[in-house]
Image: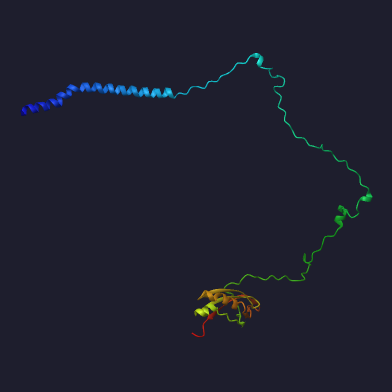
Length: 241
């Protein structure tokens, strides 16, 4: 019984495959050829059906009696006429008409070259070496001085104005010091005030307003006034504290 089972398993593997492989090989070849022809037929059918028909032009042949006269050979090379707009009024050249001497105004006269050459040119005083300048022209330099200007005598204030204590800072109990740099001109008057250092911004504007009201003696250098910068502190302090 066991020997029979082994013989059947061996026959099934090699013997049966050898017996049926030719049959299945022919079937596979036939199916492949069929698919090939089907694909080729589908391609050529699509190409055939996709072709558009060429447009047809219908022409009717007329009789000789319907054709009309042929074009003229003489006027074949003539250029087409172009319409050019012309002036509405024909221009005319004016003829000069003499005017009587009585109608000419005597005020409308033109000087001749001889009369123009005889006129004397205006004389400008001060031109050349012999002229004298009657009045000196003084140009003031409004540019601010340098931060450091050497002087023989420093400016001194002759009028001092205290700044106004801001009401808001007074209620809040704020105190501080503001350093102001003042530009003192040659006459001892302040021309500009700049904040150098400030403990509170609320004190800046009152300090500038007070500094612009000060009066100084001018700074001196070589027996002449010079403009300089001076710095002063403005202290804001409450008396109750």
